[in-house]
Image: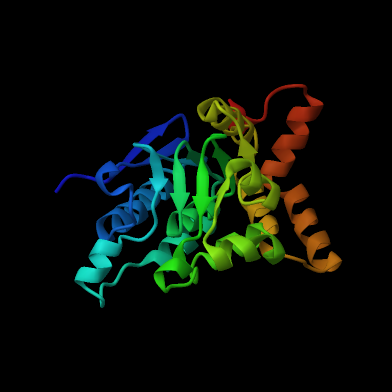
Length: 243
């Protein structure tokens, strides 16, 4: 069986590549399973960051409808995949060079940062197929206010990268996606691993009490990373995680 997902680890960065161009990187049972396996590899390797990218002109066309039609009872652990990406310990960055539709938008939106080429288009096509953007509503609504999504969700209309950026679905739009991703990765790798993990939880966790945040802040100041960070600042040298 030909692999549909490729994994590469280099200098702490795990690059995961969707490679199923014939069906536009549709979220087939095999591709979803291999994506989950690649994330496991990244975690086991203590990857400092994950870059999710693709081959071909489409990032992902969404769920594999052909497979679904052939077997209506098909079990595709798509929700597990989305949750795995959203809760992955290290920062995740989607590098989007081509169009994205339906479930593919959910996969992209589950990443912490999304860099899209200015030519990329998006569409939530579910309602036009008698479906609803159920699972993907969780990562998408965590990024965007619902009024900005009402039109795209309810009409299935196509929108461009600039509109996606305005609504918060995409964090960066640039004609050189690779350059922006590389810049972001350098910034991420400058941060301390535990500090990044905690910051991700803050971004995803919503409002908390000041008392909880004070306790968390005190814990981080007393932690090994916090101590090393402050000491390296005072000694005018890079912290241990940058060496």
